[in-house]
Every structure is written in C-alpha cells, then in structure tokens.
Amino acid sequence: MVATRVPSHDMNEVPVLGSYILDRIGNTPLIVFRRLLPHNSRVRIFAKAEWFNPGGSVKDRAALQIILDAERRGDLTPGKVLIDSSSGNTGIAYAMIGAARGIPIELVMPASVSEERKLIAAAFGAKVIYSDPYEGSDGAIRLVREIVAAQPERYYYADQYSNPSNWLAHYRTTGPEIWRQTMGQVTHIVAGLGTSGTIMGAGRYLQGRNAKVRVIGVQPDDALHGIEGLKHMESAIVPAIYDERRLNAKLLVSTEEAFDMARRIAREEGIFTGQSAGAAFAAALRLADSLDEGTIVVIFPDSGDKYLTTSLWQKQDWSI
Image 1 (spheres, one colour):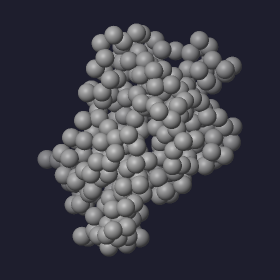
Image 2 (cartoon, rainbow, N blue to C red):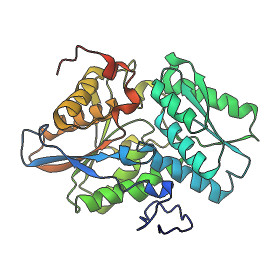
Image 3 (spheres, rainbow, N blue to C red):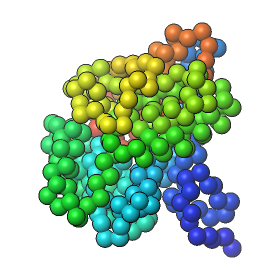
Image 4 (tube, one colour):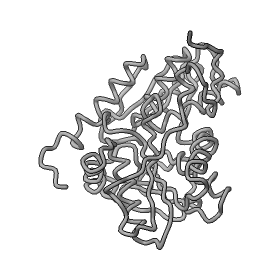
C-alpha cells in the first residue's frame, strides 16, 4: 500500500513514498553535455534542467513561494482571486498550483504567446485575458494593473516582477541545489533575464557561499526580439526585483542565435529546450571561450514542447 501523509508544501522536502504534486517542485537535475562542449576542456558546462518541475518550468519555484508567502501574510485569503501578468510559464505555474490548492487564478498574457502556453494554462482552469500582442510582457503588465485598480477587493495581485518572494524562491532552492550538485565547484551561473528572479536569487545565494562565483545575465540584443520569456532591459519596464549591480556581466544574444542553438541542442544532445535555454547556452559557450578553467551552470527554464507551433520548430530550412 502506498504511504500517504498531510502535504507539508516544504519546497525542499522529498517524501520517500507518495508525492503531493507540489512536493515535486525543485530538486531538478544537472545535465552534462557530450557534443556541444567548450573548446577548452578545463571548462565544464552543466544545464539545470528546470522542465523536470511538474508545471514544466523554472517558474514553478517562484509561483509556489509567492502563493505560500501571500497566504502566510493573509494577503491571499479564501475567495480572493490571484491575478498576475505572465508571458506564459509563470502563468502555467500559478494555474497548476491554483488547481492543486483550490485557488482561483486569472492571468493576463500577451496574445502573441505560443498556443501551447495558452492551452495549458486554460487546461488547469485559469481564466486567461489577452493583452496586445505587439506590446509583449509590458503590455500585459499595464493591463493587469488596470484590472486590479478597477476591482482591488477582488484580487490578490501577485506581481511577479516586483515580488521579493520571486527571487527568494531561488535563494532558498535553486542556489543551494546548484551548490550541492557541483559540490561547491561552480564558478559561474548563467541565466536569461525575464523577471530576473532566478539569477537574482540563485546568484545571491552562490556568492554568499563563495564570493568568487560570477553571476552572468543573458538578454536579447534588440528590443524587437523573438525570445519568449526574456526582456531587453534597456527598452522594457524593468522589474523592481532586478538589481544590475548583482551581475558580474550581461551577455547579449540575438533571436537567430538563440533559435539556432536550441535546435542544435535538440539535434546534437537530444535535449529538447525552449529558445530562452538556447540563448543562455549560446552565451555560456561564448563565456567558456574566455576562461582558462571553470564550472558553468546554465539555467534551462523549460523544454521545447510549449513552442511546437512557433517558428522555433515549424520552420523547415533550419541551418545548423
């Protein structure tokens, strides 16, 4: 007989027998590469495979922390609707957690996000409101603020871009996992800049363990980019939790470079990723060429299955 227990919602707890779905958030593996390797054999690159989270992305961590902290403070009470803007993955995470915990969820997403993301969020029972496709994540932020201002008593506005629980989730889980998994040998962490919660939290933890760890942010090289989930900070509404002073470097990647690398990762490593992972890995390879030695951990936020209907995978004349 399978053992059962009262769910603890502890993000670091791993039950022995039986798992409440939210207990499976975190403790994702590090993936080693066999073919896409740095030129310098003294530099190692590992990918933190965040699609192993039950909602399929790194955003499960932040969404759970945001919800638990809001409940503890009394901000998210029975009957209140959690609302937030999202380019997709955080919205899916809210929807999945909301379904598991009986919390009504409303999401504002740019109409341009992939069909898969729209369908998955709706499948979990979330109400999805679409903002202008040409205004991207900034347009979704503006619209959700208007909705909340009109009915403030109805909503708990999670505000992932300003909520410190976002980066705190990664300080408490992602950073410690990377430290353990590399046995303290990590020298660089590389992650894309969206809300920036992952790199702000995990980077802060790792530098607390070893001040020599370098924290590298990756962003699109142009305001009019096609890398879902990432922000071009110079032209976007900058998240309140983002502090560029905590970065040791910021690397720029083009949409074409991100897409090409995601396809190469799939075809040469058998790892099916999204374009933001492609961007981060392209930057990590470039970084590796500048090092004499090191251990680089790259955050792969999600898999490629949420982008099957986009040009990332639909185009047939890929040049690899």
